[in-house]
Image (tube, rainbow, N blue to C red; front, side):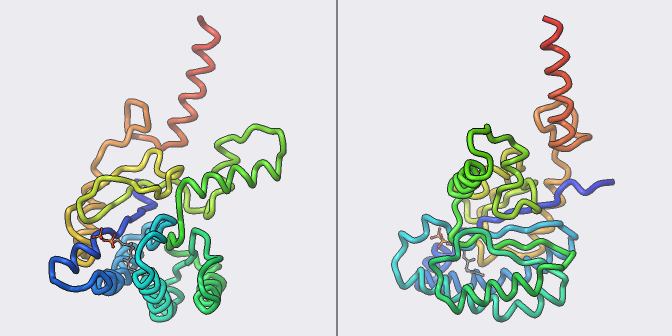
Amino acid sequence: MEKKIKHVAIIMDGNGRWAKQRFRPRIWGHIRGSSIVGSIVEAASDLELQALTLYAFSTENWSRPEDEIRSLFKLLHKFLKKESVNIIKNNIQFKVVGNIEPLDSNLKALITDIENKSAKASGLKLSFAFNYGGRQEILDAVNKHIQLKPGIAITEIDMNKLLYRPEVGEVDLMIRTAGDQRISNFLLWQMAYAELYFTTVKWPDFTNIMFKKIIEEVEKRDRRFGGLDNSGNLQASQEVAKINLNKLKDTH
Ligand code: FPP
């Protein structure tokens, strides 16, 4: 049977609150938070997910204090340096989605290096959403379309091809830790039919056992994509809808 959950997206929230509860600075929470990312990536690989997208820094996160922003950049650098070996060893195809232009040149070079070295990997498609905003991604796609096909209306097929990383496709499941029930400008287009799962566990306490349990639980959910049964997928459901619409249009 075809696996239902192929692409998981995670909002890794609650680092600051986790640290505050322990009377530590927020950065302490980010350090602990970044230390568990590797094991979640490994779990995603073990589960044979096709794609995992992690929200590491949003376009809105620039409003945080400067030292916190610098620390998040440093943690990303450290994480990538440490994990690059595992990324290659585990056949993971790594990409950053978002605008890396404002990052320092060493970090940009490291990102590009891992992206290039892992480009041909056939396992998990791992994306780090860094300096990423969902509305910006949609705007960038529409603006690219205007340049490519001026005066021609954009379609869903065009849009799917113009996203930052088209090959990862729809999000099947979005998990957010730390209790807030929002999607916070994350993968807005790709999450149209995503299952949402909110846990009160803060990111530094999230484990790969919890991750596996959530996937098992959500795989039991009935995903109908606007139809009445869960036997198909979004594309199949959209095709049936199109056929029915045309039939019904002609008969009344
Ligand atoms: C939210 O916690 C988390 C982020 C802003 C980004 C996620 C960052 C990490 C997991 C650490 C960096 C890791 C890598 C690999 C780059 P928050 O500060 O918003 O928590 P709060 O809501 O409790 O304040």
